[in-house]
Image 1 (cartoon, rainbow over the protein chains, first blue to last red):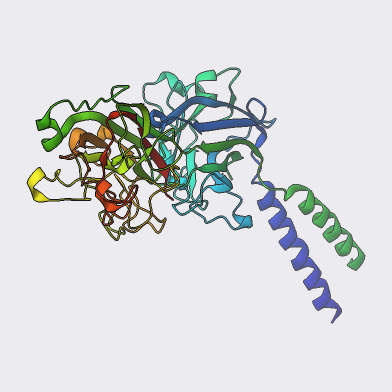
Image 2: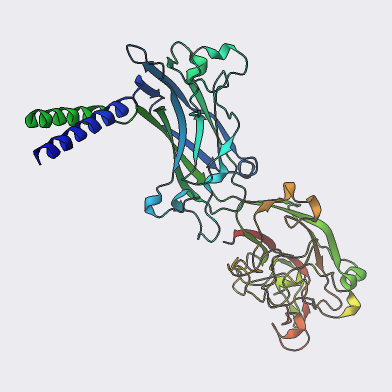
Amino acid sequence: MLTLKKAYYQIIVISLLLISTLTYSQVHCGTVELQSSATVDANFTFTDFSKYNAGITILSVARLRVKVENKDPIDLDCSWKLRMFIENNSGAGTAADKWEEITLYGNGNADQPSISDLEVRVNNNCGTPLNTSFRSFTDVNDILNIIEEMLPQVIVPAGSCTASGTKNVNGPGSYLTNYNEYSFDVDLRFKPGFTYNPGVYKLNIRFRLEEVN
Amino acid sequence: MRNFSKLLSTVVLIGFATTASAQLVDEKDVTITLDMQPVLELEMTTPNQIEFVFDEIGEYQAGITQYGATILKVSATVNWDLYAVGRSDTGNRFWSQQVSYGATSNSVADLPLSLLELRQSQQNNGGTAGTSIVDYSSAFATNQSGASGNNSLFVNDDGSGTPPALDNKYIAGHAGTTGIGDTMSAGTYLNNSGTTSDFYYVMDYRIMPKLPATFPNAFEADSTTSESLTSGIAATGFEYAEGGVYTMYVQYILLEDQ
């Protein structure tokens, strides 16, 4: 009986050691840091007909700066990804594909604006994002990649931008030393058309810089 | 040995808790505010004054028509209605007499505002909810064809600008907010087929007094009840318009319908 108990403890210890080792292996980088100017507010205000007709584009509404430092000693598996999430306060009852309503200017008989009408473009001077055109979220469950996690993992080191067309730079580096690869401009465009309820609405785009496992 | 195993597992657990933290993450937010204000724009090209001077017999008989005197162009970001309403300084449904050329026992100075006839270039494609004449798109009735209320101007009894009812005329859209047959969709004349679109209306004006001047085409808002001077709105017996100068104005109103 005692022998069995001893074996049981040893199995637990070995398992925990194994898990601990595996878990520890997830952290490859020293720090990851996403900087931007203080919380950014973008205002789309449609007050005349030409704006409704042509839409409004806000260029460089935010400038994201990435700083990923490797560990000491260097871990060759340190890399990162940058993604966008959309939020509409769905907990308050907002439909998954609509903007959050703050106030209405009419009786609300028409449709609420759709999330998919908001277009986002993220790019940098090197064009390292795999998609540098305007894109849309379908709903709050949609996630848009800027710098993607490649499977199998491929680490594109800082400074690769000098080679024409290099995409997805995701190795350790900083906007301080490789500005063109580690800083990103965010552009927004919205063209409402004439089918939506006039009113005030809100959305939040969350940019997440994440170390790749 | 047993105590050592416990100690070892405790240490490992602490180590696990310390190192099991998720991978490194940082986040930033961009909050977007969308402010869509309703826009209704009515552009109007028209002379300040439209004059009808009746100084020949032929003009009394055939009337005077001012073709294309007013052009209305609509741009709207919301569903809309457009209507015309006759108004004057009198505050009721009559023209305002500025000068009288002489009153007699049978002359009538209270000329109904509805004696002015309108004709719009495009039919009302959002007015099927209407229960009578829904717009001013009919051709002007000729002198010989008898009295017609198809084109008489909509006027409120109290002279106000209150929107027409279901049995009254609109230029576009109609009474109600059901969205079925009573509204025009948002859009603009700028990108909707120019002069043949639902956002562009050329308005003609006509006054036909006939002889004697009784204005047979003056009808109440329902387009079926005559307001001509022989209908007994003033003195009894045989009435006709009192010679003079009269003024009124047509108010075009574009309103949100949603």
